[in-house]
Image 1 (cartoon, one colour):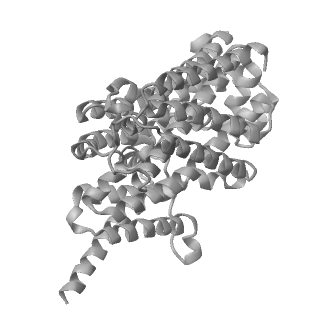
Image 2 (tube, rainbow, N blue to C red):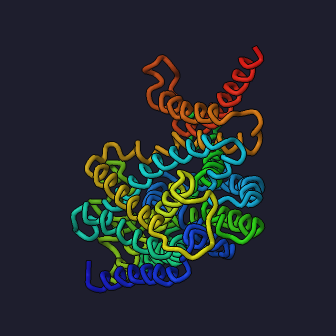
Length: 490
């Protein structure tokens, strides 16, 4: 890393910290700190939601998917967008009708206190694990770029994110995400432009090489419900997962609660869902551009990475070894921005859920009166420490990284099932029955997707986990409630 790279990265870090300080002056109540005063416009909320969905794994993994295969990943956008539309049409109006401070407060209104606490515990445990693993994955890349110990990179990243969330709350999260989204997207565009200008044939050569390798194929219409790369299963999975992330995950859904009304919140959710198509196409294009670059200028190290099927390492290798000073720093800053946009959201979502849903505040509603916010800020620091600690453990044991990345797939079904019950069947389920259903769904999904054959059961592809978990939660909750009513009649 050259001095110019360090200057670019330092400028980025300073900018996000200054945004946190700017937001701090207005974050002097629970309502301001956790909900940005419910006064943010739909555009910054949409940008922040979009940025949070684009993690560091997107920055590295989506180009890797194009290098490994083709544009098939883009076909999943349809399911994700339909999910965003359903969340905007049915979930958001319900949240605003009851003016909830967190999405899990809605469960208490519709099912009972137990459902709210149960969902909160599931969310906190699974979000801590999933976000810590994402932190570890990005920190591994950052430690390579900066040639620093992994522990140091983890602590630095967690510390920077905690600093601006600590001072500015959700408003700082939203506006730093806007900045980070701009850096994230401009970095991808800059990398693509560098390749185009480097190749003798320019953009035409990228297209020709990509076409010859069938990189631009989008749709896989095979009817194979065991293969998540197909249009049918992929979009079914994307739809159900999108419902869960947009409507049942405080990490993502908290931004929609920051708008003044449901109309603007719905516009933000739909806009963020539509924008995903652009970012997916952009990062797949980055992958094809890098593929074309090394097709024209073979690199033994890249050839080895592809032979070992380590496709996610190709783009980071390109950034480190091919880009000039300054641009290299901008791309590393973009990678940091991708990681921070997910990490800051997790800290805010975890702190708000613990504060409101686990009864750490004096009321169940957010307050607008000015008050010292030591409790919320202590929670932000505590969760930053927890995420860093788990990330350090996972970073030292990369063999369990994949399990950590899939953890939300095991728990999202139970969470989504609870919200569907609350919206559609609140009178057909009890609080205790809902907890039994959601927790047992996690065990059922883990057994079926990981250890099914060992129990004499068929092997279930992991994308079915969220779908099975949702259906399980609905069926078990209604059955337990019906059995309870029947026993009372007897």
